Structures are given as C-alpha cells and as structure tokens.
Image 1 (cartoon, one colour):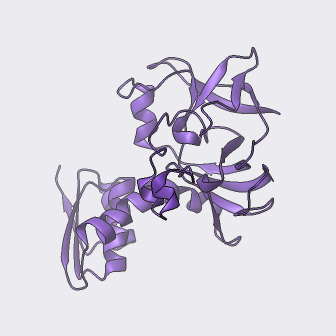
Image 2 (cartoon, one colour):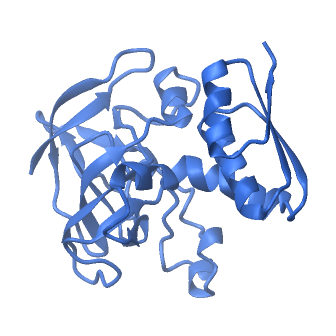
Length: 237
C-alpha cells in the first residue's frame, strides 16, 4: 500500500515527507494505523548524527494507533484494537523468550532497524529499502510491527496520550518504581523537567512520595512539574 512517511536520508538534513510503499504484514506481524506519535530525543540523536543507524530510515518509536490488519498466526490483537507500539518487542523463539523472560530477549537488540526476519516492509517509490527505527517507524500514516510490538489498551484511552506511554512515561515512571524503588513517605529530587523528568515526578506521586522537588531552568517546565505533582519548585537559572 502507498502511505506518507517522514524519511531521513542523511544526518543533519530535514526529514522529507513523501509517499512510500508499505508491504503487507507477514506471519506474526501487525499493520497499525498511526493515530499519534511523539518526538523523542532518541529520534533527534539520529537526525543530528549522534547515533548512526543505517539510513535511509523512517524514525519514530513512541506511538499509538488502531490495528488495521494482522498476519497469519497473530492471536494477541485483532483489527479494530487500540494499541501502544513497543520499541523493544521480543522475538518469541529465543531461549529467554521460551523461558518466559521476554525482557532478556536475544533478538530485541539485534539489528533493530529491520523486522525480525531481517527484512524491511518500507520502500521508497523508486524501490529503495527504508529502515524501521526500533522496529516501529511511527513517523508515518501506518506501520507494520511484530505482534509483540503492539500492546492492547482500552478503547477509551485517548491515543494521543497513550502514545507517550511507549517511551517517556515508562522510562520516567519505571525509573522511579523499578530502579530507584521510591517508597511511600520518601523525598525525591528530580533534576530536569522534560518528558522523562515529568514522568519521574508522576512516578513519585504514584509511589506515595511525600516531598517531590523539581529543578529546571525554564519556568514553563516548572509549571508543568507542579501540574504533575511536584510539591517544591526550584528555578536553577
């Protein structure tokens, strides 16, 4: 099918929004209509040449959408389901996946710019292959992802908010809940109130922290921090 996508051909050049060809999903894959996609600093790293994956590429990995079609063998989702896209899908067949340890999947970090069979579903109108950023490539109208890369959510969850769960929310909240293991009644200091920092604040609220101190140099970010639950604001400018 023909879709529009934002393609990066070279670092330090603008993304080019153009028609591209998207192949049908293969076995174990899902076609998702993208409803919303965030712009993460990881995308910016690639655009600036600070990270050097193979190009050309369709960037974007923080997204949500609606399942349009599924390949053979897909059981987890069906057409019409609302999903968050997962930039660390597991392969399902390595030793770790077989033991129920998908977070340790051997295939999750191997050649993350193609799908699990080592090929792409994206091509320019002239037939040149395009890489998928983190097996998502959400700067497009549609994306083909592995089944494990489409996580179902309730239909009443706004997709423009659900998209952020795919990276910023789980990174910030996960840092507080799983890594720092903040306990109820604790005091927490969050330095930097960007997308991840705000979700650290949100995670601290969920963990029951008594005092949450937010630090930034921009007044508007400190206001967002207050809205997310910070009890104290410190302007470091």
